[in-house]
Amino acid sequence: MITGAILLQTAQAVAQQLTKEKQVLFTYGDFYPKDVFGYEIVVLESAHFDSDDIRVLKQQNNTVLGYISLGEVNESAAHFPQIKNYSLGKNEIWNSHILDIENEETRESLMNIFNFNMKKGLDGMFLDNIDNYTIFGPTPGKKQALLDFLKTVKIVFPDIYLMQNAGVSIIEDTHPYINSVAKESVVTNYDFKTNKYQLREAETFLRLLNELKNAYKDYKIPVILIEYADTEKLKKAIDYRLQENNWPYFIGKVDLQSIPDKN
Image (cartoon, rainbow, N blue to C red; front, side, top):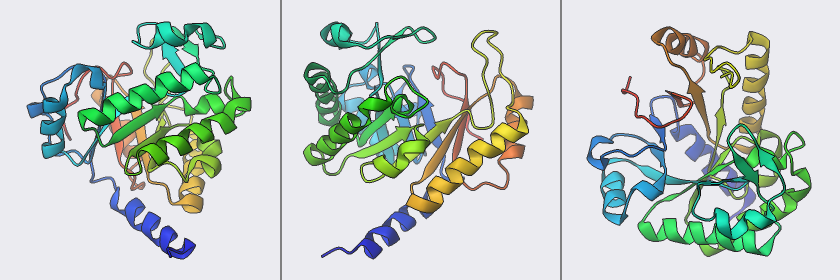
């Protein structure tokens, strides 16, 4: 029988392995698989790649994850026609529609995406828009439905790697089902109205960082940061703010369509 203490020790060991030296890549654009190598984790848009491509990526990198949003669906997504009539509103910034994960058709459509990606040979999935289910999002009342869905995913795919994006305030609920948590824009704060890349105010940066530190301390979930910059000056400012932090972080353009040069 595996005790809670052993599970905690295992989580701690995994968390300690994911450090700043372990480089991570987030990109939703198309690229040649042979050109991407040496990453601890690669997050991609799997629609660009077939099983052979995924095999190459897994040979050259440790963990390869596909993208899925569990909170919203873009109008350009293949499964949008199936679930558009069950959406709960619209996110105008990204031209996406808010999912009702409690809806049977929506859950079936999402599970089909998991099936498709896992059959391609991916190690797991990057779960976007989890913050929709917090008190700061549009569907906090659907949190239990999200947890039920994650539990089902783990039953169907026991070895799947799940990376939660944002939703730090509900990690106390999601942590049994996820392997790591990503958080965008802790150091930086991209302004969508002016299309300007910029640093966050120091006070906000420290508050967000401390929230993640507390989550890491309480649940031993590995943390990965995603930051956005368009100049070397801003990249150096990010490096400076995170110099005493040992978590891996990725710096790229906000559309995540290109692969930055490795440091």
